[in-house]
Length: 512
Ligand code: HEM
Image (cartoon, rainbow, N blue to C red; front, side):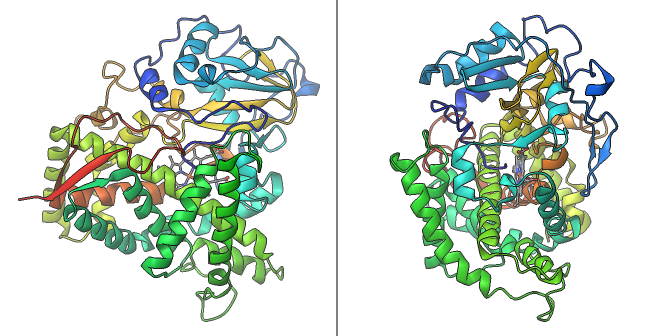
């Protein structure tokens, strides 16, 4: 599930979204566990007995991803950790860091009957991400399952997930994503121009508006007036905030507000969905030009199954949620990095000048392709400022992970964040260093396989190309035409659905 920071395991009433300090603290501890790793290889271990083996052959899912499944049913020791009632302090980042140091990269937390195992060991994370549907289910907790709804792709499991994914994937192919490029450029340019006329702007809120508008018009195909869009954005923000509600029930005002916002949002979206053109001269046969949500509808119709409106609405909310916060956090942190590191902004500007000489002034596919330094900056933003630091799964069978048993029913909290920090590239350069992604001649190097800011396996992010495109368009337009300034030194943002829109201030000025 792709929102910036999840409401975690429904069973843990005290969990709260990861905070800024988490990212910051872990950044300084790259690959620095000083706890011995548990016995056996630190990944999912091979089966103890062949009868217990589920499947060890790599599988290829419909969306073309090679998936290894080496999950085994086995019984050994439980991971170390404390299963005491968590306190708020326990859930704070420093405690995550100190638990990593105390227990090693696989440890348990939570309360008996509400157990969570945190996995921050790269090979195990990778193996778990690529595990098959029989071993693990997506489980992001009560907030996500209720606010997104049962029809949302994040809440679908097994064959139902596979079918949704197959349909939606076509709406996020390279061809489809490139068709969104002119719309992304237009929206980003208009936001930058407005910011530069406004003095200081609340950057996170503004980036959320931008990414919401992109998703509304390009992913959903909605052409809405600014007044209505503002209303939609407000409800969407309240709904997103609801994800941070723990416990998640009507007696919690944050959860209740989120549920009410969802109902209002659906009231707005439903008539729009009903009136969406099919994009293929009225035929319900899916066409390459359809937006992802039109495609979902058309595929169902073409297969003779009317898709229930509830399901289409849930999928719409899921796509909005998946695309908005994550990309907004990334672009906000990207602007902060560029502001505080003028030499990087300058290198990007030099690259843009060379690209304009070669390809003209339009931001075209060729510009995006040749934007190697820009791509390196985007990767570095995703590496250092994980927009999705953790993903959550539920064990459907007893699993053996890194030599420990994870009993059926327990929640696994997989640290993509640690995964990225441990990806073992230029370890002598622990800070923000885009050059780690380039070779000596400035060409992009092959990315390490455990660099997974967009997840992996059957749940791999659908919008990864779109997200990178948004980041690179914003970067290019910014360095071509503007400079920016923070009024004072501000903390880098961390993925957190409860972050206030005005937490980061920035002013933009046209470049002389
Ligand atoms: C920087 C921006 C983004 C990041 C870091 C990101 C990250 C992720 C991650 C880590 C997952 C996997 C979740 C899991 O394993 O449970 C995911 C899934 C997903 N993402 Fe993204 N995402 C981003 C932007 C987008 C955009 C722009 C879209 C467009 C709609 C999108 C759509 C999705 C969808 C639909 C899924 C669910 C896939 C599934 O359940 O099979 N994401 N994303």
